[in-house]
Amino acid sequence: LPSNYPSLVRFLDYANIDSICVFGHGFDGVDKPYYTDILIPRYNLLPWTFVSHNEESKTNIEAFCCQNGIRLYQMKNAASPEKIDLRIADAFRTDSVIPDI
Image (cartoon, rainbow, N blue to C red; front, side, top):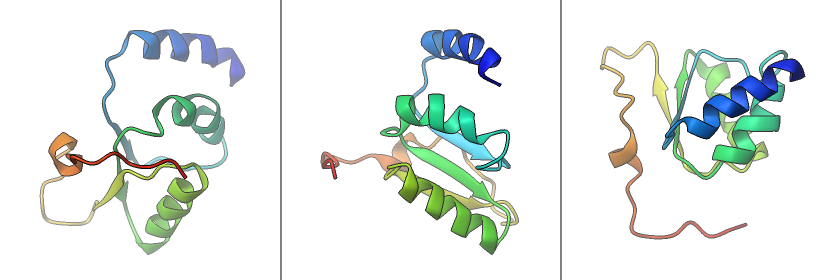
């Protein structure tokens, strides 16, 4: 896992990332180090969209965001008949600054 970090960091250094979308990932096991070591420190202040599959995943998403200081997030229901629009910038538009905790 850590042997993948340099390649991921190089990719992220050149990527123009303005929002994060998590679709069908677990927040523990093999994925957890990528979140805690790389993605959260870099992007916790960006807007995040999570696609949930059931009530348990909603609970896990809320806990994940709370534990990791992700305050700007929304959840979409994967089972919803509505199209999931991952262009989320307008959903988070605000004129106020989010205060530090």
